[in-house]
Structures are given as C-alpha cells and as structure tokens.
Length: 227
Image (cartoon, rainbow, N blue to C red; front, side, top):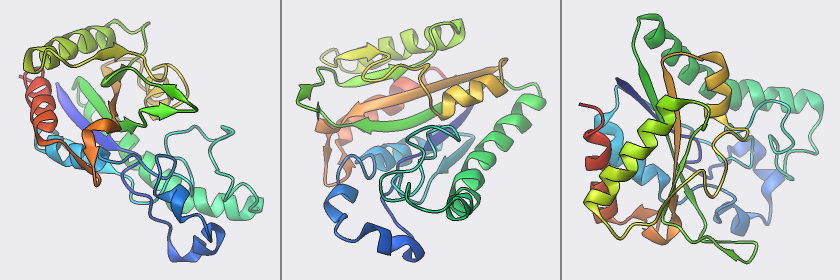
C-alpha cells in the first residue's frame, strides 16, 4: 500500500499581496483558527514513511483548502468581502494548485493499480467554545468504507500498544464523512483509496512542536501498517 501524506493547515502565512486584509488579525492568525499548531512538525516526522508528501504553504484564513468549492467556510471573514474576480484569483493561485497536485498523484498511483492510503495530518484545540474535548487523538474516516474502518481499528491498536494511556476516538472531534479534502477524494476515487484524517490534541504541542515521544509512537504505529 502506497502512502500519501498531506498537511493542509501547516502554516498561517498570508502572502504580501493580501496582508492588508489581515490588519490587526495577528492574534487570530496565531490561534488554532489560523493554522494547526504542531501538525507540520508531526508531518515531517512521518514523511520518511510516505511515497509522496504535500503540505499547503499559505494560511487557511486566506482560502480553506480542506473545504469544497462552494462551502460556506471556503473563505474566511477576511476574504469573504472580496469580489468574485478576486476570489477566483485566490482559488487559481492557492486552492486548485494544491488540491490538483494531490489529486493528480493519487490518480497516477491508482491508475497503475496501486492501493493507496492518504493520511492527512491535523491538530485540534483542547477547548472549543467552552467545551473540553476529552480525547488525545481522533481518527476520522467514512464508516461506510470498510477498509477505512479496518485501518483505523488497527492503527488505534498499534498506538495503544505504544502508549496504553492514549485516549483515542473515532470520528471525533469531527465526523469523517463531513466536508473535507478526503471526503471529496473518496467520491473521485471510490476504489483503492483510503482517506484518513489524523486529529491530534494540541495539548501535545509546545511552540509549534509536537512532543517527541508522541511523534515516535505515531511513527511506529503507522510504519507497522505499511509493511
């Protein structure tokens, strides 16, 4: 099974051309709304396992590459006010190049008869709207797809073997079949594609770095499933 690793919310970077839209927004950009703290660090830890890896270089508040075109949160409050022409430019500059590059690579591998695991790395804030999210790791998948369910069961087992104290939940804090890049790709590739989002609690993150022990545990748990 081939592994494609992605990280959609690696950075909060806003290109110079659009920085005027984000005046006085630095606090928001540096929060969980601006990017996924620690996600890129974990992505880099796992990259050696991947056949191909992709990360998005600009912030999600410019345009959200983990949402479908037309979704209400595709553009943030900072970019929703832009004209239709300007929004199209954003999509052409930042949204489609990233998504198309990932989709093209998946299509190429599946076209060669390969079975493919797409592992998308995210982190989540422990406290959201005054709700304490009582889990360490969320594994998001489509329950209707047996291969995705089986992978998550096995990956959870491997993680628990590495660290029995970890609290791991399926389809939490989000539903795996909700709108997202993996959900879109499942429709494009109904066969030989397994799309999993890994959501890690940001309590494991300090200064945008994931705890070393956790990174190693995740690496070993994933490696064992790629043999």
